[in-house]
Image (cartoon, rainbow over all chains, first blue to last red; front, side, top):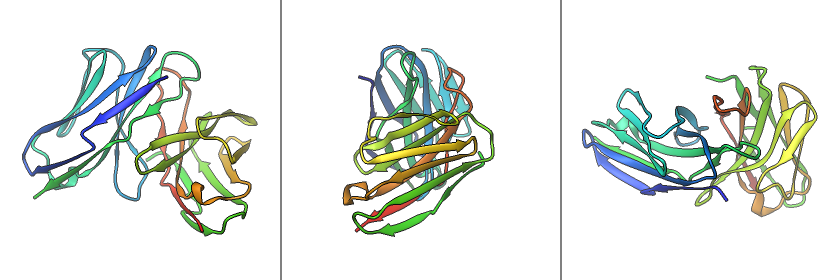
Length: 111
Length: 114
């Protein structure tokens, strides 16, 4: 059974204080790992897709990296507007290819 | 933003009442999905569709049915709503299910079953 575990569950940072969110996964063959941002009362918003170990992608203050067992979402010098819940999902290489989602990390950035 | 709308956005209903949620897309994507999101559980797949009249079950399909008579519309029906179905429901779409594909989500429907 595919499993996705995100840590920490919640993270509080001061503005400018860089940190990382973790997504560890167990899947029988990885076809893709996805990161989403979700604001309160809204649907998840797509951020990145990573396909193979060693791959990195960046968008503004966010950088996602991937290894064979986990992915990190690095947040550099965060701002209050980066406050949101960040979701990770993995798409397996077999079966129906339906992604499995983690429970998310709730990030609050204080000014 | 992906052209996905959900209706209604909020609904309060009573136990035993039938409820239908609608997802409408303007992207002409083949795949459509219904998820529910609950605290402590994350997003869980209810049903998905891989074409008109082609649907399959997800991990939490009991008590739910779906229909897709047109590419753009995917309906989720609770035949007899229960309090355990109080949740936020999200529709998602994707062009394919392949490696390059990405799911895009709608704004959600908050359902409360009293």
